[in-house]
Length: 136
Image (cartoon, rainbow, N blue to C red):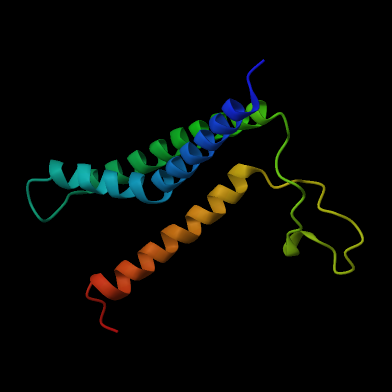
């Protein structure tokens, strides 16, 4: 039986891997495909094939990354021996009287995905308003 400190270290590594994979999902994959297709283009006037390659490449890569994140989440649940975090009441899933719970617990992957979406949106906003030469 593994000792508790190695289980904790494995759980932390899995959370870090989920966070990295989630950031790749929101930032790395789209930027990566844009870079790949830009290197394949010989002119500054891309053809329809380039746009199609970006769309299909991003979609397929994101589906693959979601599968990887799902595997990491299941591994995390198996390592920790629980089925997620304590129930987190989500305001949009509660009745106005609060008489019953949502029936679903938020998993670590839920928290990681929400956090990384907020980070990606913040990074995009900072880039757009500070570095992209926005007209505002």
